[in-house]
Image (cartoon, rainbow, N blue to C red; front, side, top):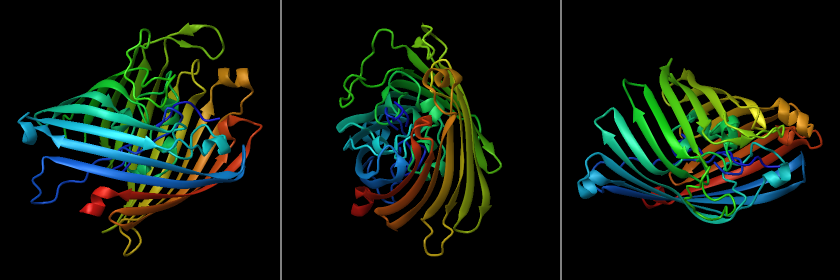
Length: 394
């Protein structure tokens, strides 16, 4: 069973789906010297073949794909609006599911949606106030800035984007891939390496009854999702401390009615372990908690290693190993007979074959998919390719 609603991470990873994953938030490349365009346009096609080779619900393979279309404009240079930026982001996904075969909750592919659709994913304006503050308003992917690290963005499985404890929450997930909601985000950078950010979101992104539609609905009783995060420098890396809370009431897992208090916190860090001229070895860890009264998983722990640029002549390549463990809440175990956890391990290598083509084989071991004692441990093998039209034209 695929956990409803997890999240995104990557051309520059920071940063899934209302059916359980993490996607990739794309930051357009900087303009080349002499390029005086006040706007950028990018199309990226990601294709993936993944197969469940053993265990899980059933053996088999699936073809998944994702198209990102991004338009980014400097409104100061374009129309004279000082300090303003426009961002428009559209998505297409074919809707195929590998988790139907694996039976996992955390999602081994962060481009899976389960629904074939073309969507408006983000549409916001960012207003800067000097060099230290900004306000962003519109359709906005929470995981593009909150709960996101560069090093973990290498991985194709969802829990290394936004943590499973946060991604599972809400009636239709938080505002993450592939459905986002209206939001207002403020950010303040008081010193180098430090950022304080906070946001308020419509708590129900999209329309749960019509998942293929782009919908903005401010329904009565939806409430708001409130998120805050502090980013701080840490020994050459960074530390994130975050907290989130829904204002609406949710049904308790134990059937004792509905009440407020669906909330959670996380701590996340990235540290450089070794560096040389062209290569880095970065470690990352994350721990999070969520309210056990409302959520399947109330604790989450992940970590991994990212080796980038260590192969001579392949400085843009990266090798990674990561593990993500989601632990079931006691009320959920009592009502379902679930096991204590689902643990997912990923080994991946991303090869930048050309400036416009990357190939990324990956292997996954999922212990106790969906924490279901009746589902055997799964082994999943996949190959992802990513084509950047922007870089191909350049």
